[in-house]
Structures are given as C-alpha cells and as structure tokens.
Length: 140
Image 1 (spheres, helix red, strand yellow):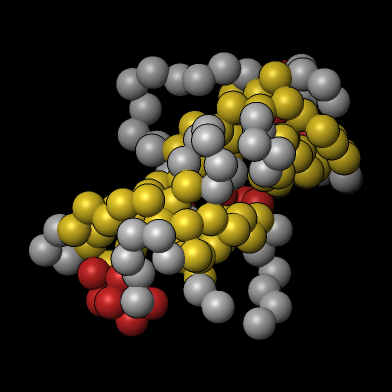
Image 2 (tube, rainbow, N blue to C red):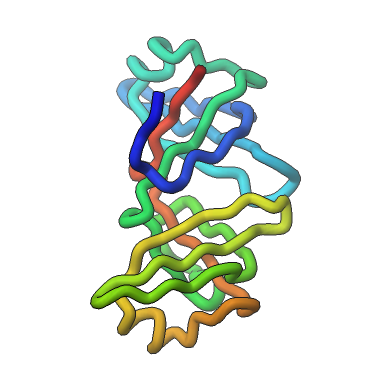
C-alpha cells in the first residue's frame, strides 16, 4: 500500500486505553516521544491492535504544527521535540522536517510566514505538535 501522507512512523503498541467508543493507542518507536492516536474501538479490533503489535503512525504533513518549545496547557497530546534537519520554502507554504532523539523524522507543511516568524532554521530546536485525532494507525 502506498499513501500520500509524508509521515509513516513505524513502531509498536505500548498501551491501549479503551473507552466506550474510542481508544487512545500509545505507539513507541524508540525511547523518546511516544505517539498517541485517538481511534475508534472498532478500528482497534479491526486492526488487531494489542500491546507489542507492530504498526505505523500515519500523519499528514498538513496536520503537523510547529513551536520553538513545548507548550503547557494545550490539548494536543503529541509534542515531539527535535532538531530541524530541513526547511524548504515554496511560493506560499514550506515544509519543515525535524529529527527527534531516536532518529525519527517528522515533516510538516506550514506557511513561509510562520517559518520566518518562528525563526525555523536547520540546526534549530523545534517541537512538532499533533492532535491525537490526527494520527491514523496502519498495520501490515
């Protein structure tokens, strides 16, 4: 299966916090920055998710926002710290890619104005922020 989402991060299910309708699935892909996904219980069952099962966190670049440091008091469950490894500006929007302490890269599509106002440059620290409801899970 090929998909257009830039971020396809391989990991394993660390835990599943089940609810009546949805579950929060925690995916580990190293020692730092687990990714949380909010998906339906039906999807948990259909994908056969269980602790230790390998899977992919799939995130569209347009669902990633950036900050220069972690933000307290925000509802987004994923704040992944890293170093900027690439900044490519386009006509209006650009792509920023960070790499975290485990070597995992996450790319986001943001406006050139945001890139400039935040001072995002290669080698700088940044945080990728992603809502758990924007994380899809895929299995082989």
